[in-house]
Image (tube, rainbow, N blue to C red; front, top):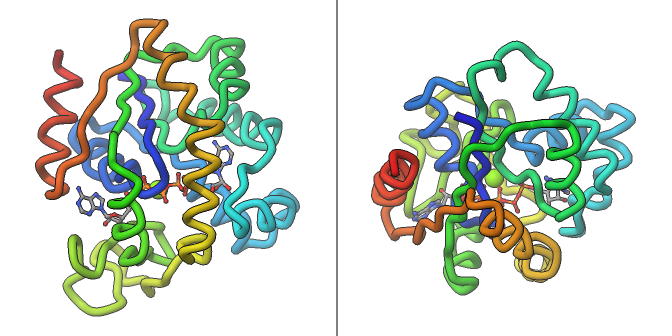
Length: 210
Ligand code: AP5
Ligand code: MG
């Protein structure tokens, strides 16, 4: 199964990708996580990407296309993959087609903008493995410590309210057109994001079976 998760920032792409990749036994690939790791390591790409990510802008398409080409060539992608947060522009989607990457389904997780603010203001992420938590909706068992790897939980810099608004604006302008792009190709399924994380997962798994 080659899957794309679409949705606004904070819609729950990363949260669902973490669960679904275990159920389907395929890797989840988050360009956001790959870029944040590069920023942390201070690689050339990380240094270039930092100012975009911090301001809520998109990282240039050529950088993203390079990242994804390299990642999809790794052996663990042979039996399928989940793309979380990529493609995010029509140019990126077209680049995947040009690369000959087969996509089976594109799941659009729909969540209203008002909910997004609430979700992102309480999000905590693991500084080591990137796992995502929420102070109210998905708390870690020990405060500020990752359940999965024990890493320290931090607040993402781009989760500041002003940056969230900018990310939402960018989403509506540049990423939302992908909904029609994949609908026209008969790949799109829409899942209404639910209040409970597990309820969204149940709808998503059902949508994948259909
Ligand atoms: P990226 O890391 O992909 O950020 P994003 O798309 O803004 O998405 P988020 O990670 O913020 O949200 P999510 O949908 O994963 O939500 P989550 O599951 O955490 O990208 C960051 C930046 O990198 C971009 O701004 C850009 O600069 C750059 N970039 C990355 N990819 C790029 C690309 N392809 N092209 C160009 N630039 C790129 O959930 C959010 C919170 O809500 C969590 O706290 C979670 O616990 C909680 N939650 C989840 N589901 C529920 C639920 N059902 N009920 C209650 N709470 C919930
Ligand atoms: Mg994410």
